[in-house]
Image 1 (spheres, rainbow, N blue to C red):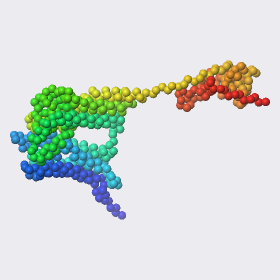
Image 2: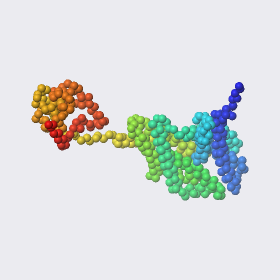
Image 3: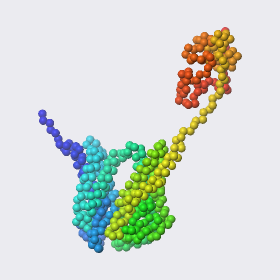
Image 4: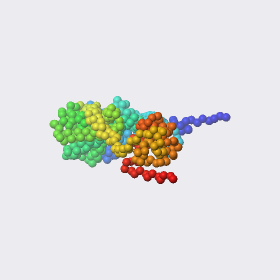
Length: 513
Protein backbone atom coordinates (compact mmCIF):
# COMPACT_ATOMS: atom_id res chain seq x y z
CA UNK A 1 0.00 0.00 0.00
CA UNK A 2 1.28 3.47 -0.86
CA UNK A 3 1.17 6.04 1.92
CA UNK A 4 0.55 9.63 0.91
CA UNK A 5 2.82 12.08 2.80
CA UNK A 6 1.47 15.60 2.88
CA UNK A 7 3.74 18.62 2.62
CA UNK A 8 4.38 20.49 5.88
CA UNK A 9 2.75 23.59 4.41
CA UNK A 10 -0.37 21.59 3.73
CA UNK A 11 -0.29 20.13 7.24
CA UNK A 12 0.09 23.58 8.76
CA UNK A 13 3.45 22.72 10.28
CA UNK A 14 6.29 24.81 11.63
CA UNK A 15 7.11 26.29 8.22
CA UNK A 16 3.63 27.76 7.99
CA UNK A 17 3.98 29.21 11.47
CA UNK A 18 7.26 30.91 10.55
CA UNK A 19 5.77 32.26 7.33
CA UNK A 20 2.82 33.62 9.27
CA UNK A 21 5.20 35.31 11.71
CA UNK A 22 7.06 36.91 8.82
CA UNK A 23 3.79 38.23 7.41
CA UNK A 24 2.89 39.59 10.85
CA UNK A 25 6.14 41.53 10.92
CA UNK A 26 5.50 43.01 7.49
CA UNK A 27 1.97 43.99 8.48
CA UNK A 28 3.27 45.68 11.63
CA UNK A 29 5.66 47.77 9.55
CA UNK A 30 2.91 48.66 7.08
CA UNK A 31 0.50 49.69 9.83
CA UNK A 32 3.04 51.99 11.47
CA UNK A 33 4.04 53.56 8.17
CA UNK A 34 0.43 53.92 7.03
CA UNK A 35 -0.70 55.59 10.27
CA UNK A 36 2.08 58.16 10.03
CA UNK A 37 1.40 58.73 6.35
CA UNK A 38 -2.25 59.48 7.09
CA UNK A 39 -1.26 62.23 9.53
CA UNK A 40 1.24 63.80 7.12
CA UNK A 41 -1.12 63.68 4.16
CA UNK A 42 -3.92 65.19 6.28
CA UNK A 43 -1.61 68.05 7.28
CA UNK A 44 -0.63 68.53 3.63
CA UNK A 45 -4.25 68.63 2.50
CA UNK A 46 -5.24 71.12 5.19
CA UNK A 47 -2.33 73.43 4.39
CA UNK A 48 -3.44 76.46 2.32
CA UNK A 49 -0.01 76.82 0.70
CA UNK A 50 1.48 73.36 0.16
CA UNK A 51 5.09 73.49 -0.97
CA UNK A 52 5.07 70.10 -2.69
CA UNK A 53 2.70 67.54 -4.09
CA UNK A 54 1.51 64.26 -2.60
CA UNK A 55 4.86 62.68 -3.45
CA UNK A 56 6.63 65.11 -1.15
CA UNK A 57 4.17 64.33 1.65
CA UNK A 58 4.78 60.59 1.26
CA UNK A 59 8.56 61.11 1.29
CA UNK A 60 8.19 63.15 4.45
CA UNK A 61 6.13 60.36 6.07
CA UNK A 62 8.76 57.78 5.07
CA UNK A 63 11.52 59.95 6.54
CA UNK A 64 9.69 60.48 9.82
CA UNK A 65 9.01 56.73 10.07
CA UNK A 66 12.69 55.96 9.62
CA UNK A 67 13.62 58.70 12.10
CA UNK A 68 11.35 57.08 14.69
CA UNK A 69 13.56 53.96 14.47
CA UNK A 70 16.75 55.90 15.17
CA UNK A 71 17.82 56.34 11.54
CA UNK A 72 19.50 59.67 10.80
CA UNK A 73 18.15 61.68 7.89
CA UNK A 74 20.01 64.05 5.59
CA UNK A 75 18.35 67.34 4.58
CA UNK A 76 19.36 68.22 1.06
CA UNK A 77 17.21 71.36 0.54
CA UNK A 78 19.16 73.67 2.85
CA UNK A 79 19.74 77.38 2.24
CA UNK A 80 23.50 76.93 1.99
CA UNK A 81 23.22 73.92 -0.28
CA UNK A 82 25.30 71.79 2.10
CA UNK A 83 23.48 68.64 3.26
CA UNK A 84 22.63 68.81 6.97
CA UNK A 85 22.05 65.77 9.18
CA UNK A 86 18.97 65.33 11.35
CA UNK A 87 19.30 62.80 14.15
CA UNK A 88 17.02 63.83 17.03
CA UNK A 89 14.44 61.06 17.38
CA UNK A 90 10.93 62.12 18.46
CA UNK A 91 10.51 59.43 21.11
CA UNK A 92 6.72 59.59 21.07
CA UNK A 93 6.73 58.61 17.39
CA UNK A 94 8.80 55.55 18.28
CA UNK A 95 6.09 54.22 20.60
CA UNK A 96 3.76 53.02 17.80
CA UNK A 97 6.34 51.06 15.73
CA UNK A 98 7.85 49.46 18.83
CA UNK A 99 4.43 48.45 20.13
CA UNK A 100 3.43 46.96 16.76
CA UNK A 101 6.57 44.80 16.60
CA UNK A 102 6.07 43.79 20.23
CA UNK A 103 2.48 42.77 19.53
CA UNK A 104 3.39 40.82 16.40
CA UNK A 105 5.97 38.72 18.25
CA UNK A 106 3.65 38.20 21.19
CA UNK A 107 0.72 37.07 19.04
CA UNK A 108 2.97 34.69 17.13
CA UNK A 109 3.88 32.77 20.27
CA UNK A 110 0.47 33.10 21.88
CA UNK A 111 -1.58 30.18 20.54
CA UNK A 112 -4.89 31.60 21.74
CA UNK A 113 -7.85 29.72 20.35
CA UNK A 114 -5.70 27.84 17.84
CA UNK A 115 -3.80 25.86 20.45
CA UNK A 116 -3.82 22.72 18.29
CA UNK A 117 -1.70 24.42 15.60
CA UNK A 118 2.09 24.20 15.81
CA UNK A 119 3.87 27.15 17.32
CA UNK A 120 7.43 28.19 16.43
CA UNK A 121 10.15 28.50 19.00
CA UNK A 122 10.83 31.83 20.66
CA UNK A 123 14.00 32.46 18.66
CA UNK A 124 12.27 31.45 15.44
CA UNK A 125 9.35 33.78 16.11
CA UNK A 126 11.66 36.71 16.87
CA UNK A 127 13.72 36.10 13.74
CA UNK A 128 10.65 35.72 11.50
CA UNK A 129 8.85 38.80 12.80
CA UNK A 130 12.00 40.93 12.64
CA UNK A 131 12.80 39.63 9.16
CA UNK A 132 9.40 40.55 7.79
CA UNK A 133 9.58 44.00 9.37
CA UNK A 134 13.09 44.69 8.06
CA UNK A 135 12.08 43.73 4.51
CA UNK A 136 9.54 46.55 4.52
CA UNK A 137 12.07 48.88 6.17
CA UNK A 138 14.61 48.18 3.42
CA UNK A 139 12.03 49.13 0.80
CA UNK A 140 11.29 52.38 2.67
CA UNK A 141 15.01 53.22 2.85
CA UNK A 142 15.28 52.80 -0.92
CA UNK A 143 12.18 54.91 -1.44
CA UNK A 144 13.49 57.73 0.76
CA UNK A 145 16.69 57.98 -1.28
CA UNK A 146 14.77 59.77 -4.05
CA UNK A 147 13.21 62.37 -1.73
CA UNK A 148 14.36 65.46 0.17
CA UNK A 149 15.09 63.43 3.34
CA UNK A 150 17.18 60.39 2.36
CA UNK A 151 18.21 58.00 5.10
CA UNK A 152 21.78 57.63 6.28
CA UNK A 153 22.74 54.07 5.34
CA UNK A 154 25.15 53.59 8.25
CA UNK A 155 22.59 54.36 10.93
CA UNK A 156 19.88 52.51 8.99
CA UNK A 157 21.97 49.34 9.06
CA UNK A 158 22.80 49.74 12.75
CA UNK A 159 19.81 51.15 14.62
CA UNK A 160 16.92 49.76 12.60
CA UNK A 161 17.77 46.06 13.28
CA UNK A 162 18.60 46.86 16.92
CA UNK A 163 15.25 48.56 17.59
CA UNK A 164 13.19 45.96 15.75
CA UNK A 165 15.04 43.02 17.29
CA UNK A 166 14.73 44.46 20.79
CA UNK A 167 10.99 45.04 20.42
CA UNK A 168 10.49 41.51 19.05
CA UNK A 169 12.45 40.01 21.95
CA UNK A 170 10.28 41.98 24.38
CA UNK A 171 7.16 40.59 22.72
CA UNK A 172 8.44 37.01 22.99
CA UNK A 173 9.31 37.59 26.63
CA UNK A 174 5.77 38.82 27.27
CA UNK A 175 4.26 35.78 25.55
CA UNK A 176 6.35 33.48 27.75
CA UNK A 177 4.98 35.07 30.91
CA UNK A 178 7.71 37.67 31.51
CA UNK A 179 10.07 35.25 33.26
CA UNK A 180 12.88 36.71 35.32
CA UNK A 181 16.35 35.20 35.74
CA UNK A 182 16.58 32.23 38.07
CA UNK A 183 19.03 33.97 40.37
CA UNK A 184 17.32 36.05 42.99
CA UNK A 185 19.96 38.79 42.75
CA UNK A 186 19.34 39.33 39.03
CA UNK A 187 15.57 39.48 39.46
CA UNK A 188 15.82 42.00 42.30
CA UNK A 189 18.30 44.11 40.30
CA UNK A 190 15.95 44.27 37.32
CA UNK A 191 12.98 45.36 39.42
CA UNK A 192 15.03 47.96 41.26
CA UNK A 193 16.47 49.30 38.00
CA UNK A 194 12.98 49.69 36.56
CA UNK A 195 11.81 51.58 39.64
CA UNK A 196 14.84 53.85 39.53
CA UNK A 197 14.44 54.62 35.82
CA UNK A 198 10.75 55.49 36.16
CA UNK A 199 11.53 57.80 39.08
CA UNK A 200 14.43 59.42 37.24
CA UNK A 201 12.43 60.12 34.08
CA UNK A 202 9.44 61.33 36.07
CA UNK A 203 11.63 63.74 37.99
CA UNK A 204 13.19 64.96 34.75
CA UNK A 205 9.76 65.57 33.26
CA UNK A 206 8.70 67.58 36.31
CA UNK A 207 11.88 69.68 36.19
CA UNK A 208 11.40 70.39 32.47
CA UNK A 209 7.72 71.25 32.92
CA UNK A 210 8.51 73.68 35.72
CA UNK A 211 11.17 75.37 33.60
CA UNK A 212 8.81 75.57 30.63
CA UNK A 213 6.10 77.13 32.80
CA UNK A 214 8.67 79.62 34.11
CA UNK A 215 9.49 80.65 30.52
CA UNK A 216 5.91 80.39 29.24
CA UNK A 217 5.97 83.82 27.59
CA UNK A 218 9.08 82.99 25.54
CA UNK A 219 7.63 79.63 24.55
CA UNK A 220 4.39 81.25 23.37
CA UNK A 221 6.27 83.80 21.30
CA UNK A 222 8.33 81.06 19.63
CA UNK A 223 5.19 79.05 18.91
CA UNK A 224 3.40 81.98 17.33
CA UNK A 225 6.41 82.91 15.21
CA UNK A 226 6.80 79.50 13.58
CA UNK A 227 3.45 79.42 11.76
CA UNK A 228 0.65 81.88 11.24
CA UNK A 229 -2.06 79.61 9.81
CA UNK A 230 -3.97 77.17 11.96
CA UNK A 231 -2.78 74.17 9.95
CA UNK A 232 0.85 75.11 10.54
CA UNK A 233 0.20 75.65 14.22
CA UNK A 234 -1.40 72.21 14.47
CA UNK A 235 1.65 70.66 12.83
CA UNK A 236 3.97 72.48 15.25
CA UNK A 237 1.80 71.39 18.17
CA UNK A 238 2.01 67.74 17.05
CA UNK A 239 5.79 68.04 16.79
CA UNK A 240 5.93 69.50 20.31
CA UNK A 241 3.89 66.58 21.65
CA UNK A 242 6.16 64.09 19.89
CA UNK A 243 9.20 65.66 21.57
CA UNK A 244 7.81 65.72 25.12
CA UNK A 245 9.54 62.41 26.10
CA UNK A 246 12.80 63.90 24.79
CA UNK A 247 12.24 66.82 27.13
CA UNK A 248 11.92 64.41 30.08
CA UNK A 249 15.22 62.73 29.16
CA UNK A 250 16.89 66.14 28.86
CA UNK A 251 15.61 67.11 32.31
CA UNK A 252 16.90 63.84 33.78
CA UNK A 253 20.34 64.38 32.21
CA UNK A 254 20.36 67.94 33.58
CA UNK A 255 19.61 66.69 37.08
CA UNK A 256 22.26 63.97 36.85
CA UNK A 257 24.88 66.65 36.42
CA UNK A 258 26.10 65.61 32.99
CA UNK A 259 23.76 68.16 31.37
CA UNK A 260 23.15 68.51 27.65
CA UNK A 261 24.75 70.33 24.77
CA UNK A 262 23.02 73.29 23.10
CA UNK A 263 25.41 73.51 20.22
CA UNK A 264 29.09 72.81 19.88
CA UNK A 265 30.99 74.33 22.79
CA UNK A 266 27.90 75.09 24.91
CA UNK A 267 26.82 72.95 27.86
CA UNK A 268 23.90 73.40 30.28
CA UNK A 269 24.34 71.91 33.78
CA UNK A 270 23.05 72.83 37.25
CA UNK A 271 26.28 74.78 37.67
CA UNK A 272 25.14 77.10 34.90
CA UNK A 273 25.10 77.55 31.13
CA UNK A 274 28.64 77.69 29.81
CA UNK A 275 29.58 78.70 26.29
CA UNK A 276 27.68 80.38 23.50
CA UNK A 277 24.48 78.40 22.84
CA UNK A 278 23.01 78.01 19.38
CA UNK A 279 19.28 77.70 20.04
CA UNK A 280 16.84 77.61 17.11
CA UNK A 281 13.40 79.16 17.69
CA UNK A 282 11.24 76.35 19.07
CA UNK A 283 8.75 76.35 21.98
CA UNK A 284 10.39 73.58 24.00
CA UNK A 285 13.83 75.16 23.69
CA UNK A 286 12.53 78.24 25.47
CA UNK A 287 12.77 76.23 28.72
CA UNK A 288 16.60 76.29 28.56
CA UNK A 289 18.24 78.02 31.52
CA UNK A 290 19.61 81.49 31.06
CA UNK A 291 23.30 82.11 30.62
CA UNK A 292 25.42 82.44 33.73
CA UNK A 293 25.87 80.47 36.95
CA UNK A 294 23.01 78.38 38.28
CA UNK A 295 21.05 79.18 41.43
CA UNK A 296 19.06 77.20 43.94
CA UNK A 297 16.26 76.67 41.42
CA UNK A 298 18.70 74.99 39.03
CA UNK A 299 20.13 72.85 41.81
CA UNK A 300 16.65 71.60 42.71
CA UNK A 301 16.77 69.38 39.61
CA UNK A 302 19.25 67.18 41.51
CA UNK A 303 16.27 65.88 43.51
CA UNK A 304 15.28 63.61 40.60
CA UNK A 305 18.41 61.38 40.55
CA UNK A 306 18.61 61.61 44.34
CA UNK A 307 15.11 60.19 44.79
CA UNK A 308 15.63 57.60 42.05
CA UNK A 309 18.87 56.30 43.56
CA UNK A 310 17.49 56.15 47.08
CA UNK A 311 14.41 54.25 45.90
CA UNK A 312 16.38 51.67 43.96
CA UNK A 313 18.75 51.19 46.91
CA UNK A 314 15.77 50.81 49.23
CA UNK A 315 14.25 48.21 46.93
CA UNK A 316 17.45 46.17 46.88
CA UNK A 317 18.00 46.45 50.64
CA UNK A 318 14.43 45.47 51.41
CA UNK A 319 14.75 42.28 49.38
CA UNK A 320 18.22 41.47 50.78
CA UNK A 321 17.46 41.29 54.49
CA UNK A 322 18.51 37.63 54.63
CA UNK A 323 21.44 37.96 52.23
CA UNK A 324 25.09 38.46 52.90
CA UNK A 325 26.43 42.00 52.74
CA UNK A 326 28.59 41.11 49.72
CA UNK A 327 25.59 39.86 47.71
CA UNK A 328 23.62 42.98 48.60
CA UNK A 329 26.41 45.28 47.46
CA UNK A 330 26.89 43.38 44.19
CA UNK A 331 23.14 43.49 43.48
CA UNK A 332 23.01 47.25 44.09
CA UNK A 333 26.05 47.67 41.85
CA UNK A 334 24.38 45.65 39.09
CA UNK A 335 21.27 47.80 39.45
CA UNK A 336 23.37 50.93 38.96
CA UNK A 337 24.96 49.52 35.82
CA UNK A 338 21.57 48.48 34.41
CA UNK A 339 20.17 51.97 34.95
CA UNK A 340 23.28 53.45 33.37
CA UNK A 341 22.94 51.36 30.21
CA UNK A 342 19.28 52.27 29.68
CA UNK A 343 19.94 55.94 30.47
CA UNK A 344 22.75 56.00 27.90
CA UNK A 345 20.47 54.50 25.22
CA UNK A 346 17.68 57.00 25.95
CA UNK A 347 20.11 59.91 25.99
CA UNK A 348 21.55 58.84 22.65
CA UNK A 349 18.08 58.66 21.11
CA UNK A 350 16.86 61.94 22.64
CA UNK A 351 19.84 63.90 21.34
CA UNK A 352 21.70 64.20 18.09
CA UNK A 353 22.51 66.65 15.33
CA UNK A 354 20.00 69.24 14.21
CA UNK A 355 22.09 70.49 11.35
CA UNK A 356 25.63 71.26 10.31
CA UNK A 357 28.16 73.46 12.04
CA UNK A 358 27.24 74.52 15.55
CA UNK A 359 24.01 72.51 15.50
CA UNK A 360 25.86 69.24 14.94
CA UNK A 361 25.81 68.53 18.72
CA UNK A 362 22.47 68.94 20.42
CA UNK A 363 21.07 67.19 23.48
CA UNK A 364 22.56 64.88 26.11
CA UNK A 365 25.79 63.03 25.41
CA UNK A 366 24.99 59.34 25.78
CA UNK A 367 28.15 58.15 27.52
CA UNK A 368 28.18 61.06 29.94
CA UNK A 369 24.56 60.45 30.95
CA UNK A 370 25.23 56.74 31.43
CA UNK A 371 28.39 57.32 33.45
CA UNK A 372 26.62 59.86 35.68
CA UNK A 373 23.80 57.39 36.35
CA UNK A 374 26.25 54.65 37.34
CA UNK A 375 28.15 57.07 39.56
CA UNK A 376 24.98 58.08 41.41
CA UNK A 377 24.08 54.43 41.92
CA UNK A 378 27.53 53.49 43.25
CA UNK A 379 27.93 56.48 45.58
CA UNK A 380 24.39 56.54 46.96
CA UNK A 381 22.51 53.41 45.90
CA UNK A 382 24.97 50.86 47.33
CA UNK A 383 25.21 52.49 50.81
CA UNK A 384 21.43 52.88 50.89
CA UNK A 385 20.93 49.19 50.11
CA UNK A 386 23.40 48.14 52.80
CA UNK A 387 21.80 50.46 55.35
CA UNK A 388 18.26 49.23 54.63
CA UNK A 389 19.49 45.64 54.84
CA UNK A 390 21.14 46.24 58.21
CA UNK A 391 18.01 47.96 59.54
CA UNK A 392 15.77 45.15 58.31
CA UNK A 393 17.88 42.46 59.95
CA UNK A 394 17.05 43.90 63.36
CA UNK A 395 13.58 42.44 63.15
CA UNK A 396 14.96 39.03 62.16
CA UNK A 397 17.01 38.50 65.34
CA UNK A 398 15.28 35.99 67.68
CA UNK A 399 14.38 37.36 71.08
CA UNK A 400 15.16 35.16 74.13
CA UNK A 401 12.13 33.58 75.80
CA UNK A 402 11.58 34.29 79.46
CA UNK A 403 11.02 30.93 81.21
CA UNK A 404 9.72 30.72 84.75
CA UNK A 405 12.17 29.16 87.17
CA UNK A 406 10.81 25.83 88.51
CA UNK A 407 10.25 25.34 92.21
CA UNK A 408 12.96 23.59 94.18
CA UNK A 409 12.22 19.99 95.16
CA UNK A 410 13.63 18.75 98.48
CA UNK A 411 16.62 16.47 98.07
CA UNK A 412 15.89 12.80 98.84
CA UNK A 413 17.32 11.27 102.01
CA UNK A 414 19.97 8.50 101.86
CA UNK A 415 18.66 5.10 101.00
CA UNK A 416 18.50 2.63 103.85
CA UNK A 417 20.29 -0.69 103.81
CA UNK A 418 18.66 -3.38 101.79
CA UNK A 419 18.29 -5.67 104.76
CA UNK A 420 16.81 -3.09 107.14
CA UNK A 421 13.44 -3.99 108.46
CA UNK A 422 12.62 -0.41 109.43
CA UNK A 423 12.05 0.73 105.83
CA UNK A 424 8.34 0.63 105.12
CA UNK A 425 7.19 -1.27 102.05
CA UNK A 426 5.76 1.93 100.52
CA UNK A 427 9.22 3.46 100.20
CA UNK A 428 11.36 0.42 99.59
CA UNK A 429 10.09 -0.10 96.08
CA UNK A 430 11.17 3.39 94.93
CA UNK A 431 14.88 2.56 94.62
CA UNK A 432 16.96 5.70 94.71
CA UNK A 433 13.99 7.80 95.82
CA UNK A 434 13.44 5.77 99.05
CA UNK A 435 13.69 7.63 102.35
CA UNK A 436 14.13 6.81 106.01
CA UNK A 437 11.11 6.20 108.19
CA UNK A 438 11.38 9.71 109.53
CA UNK A 439 11.15 11.18 106.08
CA UNK A 440 8.31 8.99 104.86
CA UNK A 441 5.66 11.42 105.95
CA UNK A 442 7.35 14.37 104.25
CA UNK A 443 7.85 12.73 100.85
CA UNK A 444 5.15 14.13 98.57
CA UNK A 445 3.06 11.67 96.65
CA UNK A 446 4.27 8.57 98.54
CA UNK A 447 1.69 5.79 98.95
CA UNK A 448 1.87 2.59 100.90
CA UNK A 449 1.06 0.51 97.79
CA UNK A 450 4.02 1.83 95.79
CA UNK A 451 6.21 -1.15 96.60
CA UNK A 452 3.60 -3.80 96.20
CA UNK A 453 2.34 -2.37 92.93
CA UNK A 454 5.78 -2.58 91.42
CA UNK A 455 6.10 -6.25 92.28
CA UNK A 456 9.57 -5.85 93.83
CA UNK A 457 10.84 -6.89 97.18
CA UNK A 458 11.42 -4.24 99.79
CA UNK A 459 14.78 -2.57 99.42
CA UNK A 460 15.47 -4.11 95.98
CA UNK A 461 16.49 -2.13 92.90
CA UNK A 462 14.77 -2.61 89.51
CA UNK A 463 16.91 -4.65 87.11
CA UNK A 464 16.82 -1.91 84.48
CA UNK A 465 18.21 0.72 86.83
CA UNK A 466 21.81 1.73 86.15
CA UNK A 467 24.59 0.93 88.55
CA UNK A 468 24.92 3.21 91.53
CA UNK A 469 21.23 3.97 91.75
CA UNK A 470 20.87 2.08 95.02
CA UNK A 471 23.75 4.02 96.54
CA UNK A 472 21.86 7.31 96.16
CA UNK A 473 23.93 8.84 93.29
CA UNK A 474 22.12 11.59 91.38
CA UNK A 475 21.49 10.68 87.78
CA UNK A 476 20.48 12.97 84.90
CA UNK A 477 17.76 12.25 82.40
CA UNK A 478 20.30 11.33 79.74
CA UNK A 479 21.83 8.69 82.04
CA UNK A 480 18.44 7.11 82.44
CA UNK A 481 17.85 7.05 78.66
CA UNK A 482 15.25 9.80 78.78
CA UNK A 483 15.19 12.45 76.09
CA UNK A 484 16.02 15.83 77.58
CA UNK A 485 13.56 17.52 75.23
CA UNK A 486 10.84 15.01 74.29
CA UNK A 487 8.35 17.72 73.25
CA UNK A 488 10.69 20.09 71.43
CA UNK A 489 10.63 22.53 74.35
CA UNK A 490 14.03 23.84 75.41
CA UNK A 491 12.60 24.73 78.83
CA UNK A 492 11.41 21.17 79.53
CA UNK A 493 12.77 19.49 82.67
CA UNK A 494 11.90 15.97 83.91
CA UNK A 495 10.73 17.31 87.26
CA UNK A 496 8.22 19.67 85.73
CA UNK A 497 5.52 17.06 86.29
CA UNK A 498 6.18 16.68 90.00
CA UNK A 499 3.87 18.58 92.36
CA UNK A 500 5.14 22.03 93.26
CA UNK A 501 5.91 23.07 96.82
CA UNK A 502 2.70 25.07 97.08
CA UNK A 503 0.49 22.29 95.76
CA UNK A 504 -1.05 20.06 98.47
CA UNK A 505 -0.09 16.42 98.37
CA UNK A 506 -2.95 13.96 97.84
CA UNK A 507 -4.06 12.35 101.10
CA UNK A 508 -2.83 8.81 101.56
CA UNK A 509 -5.44 6.13 101.08
CA UNK A 510 -6.69 4.36 104.20
CA UNK A 511 -4.67 1.36 105.25
CA UNK A 512 -6.14 -1.98 104.43
CA UNK A 513 -7.49 -4.00 107.32
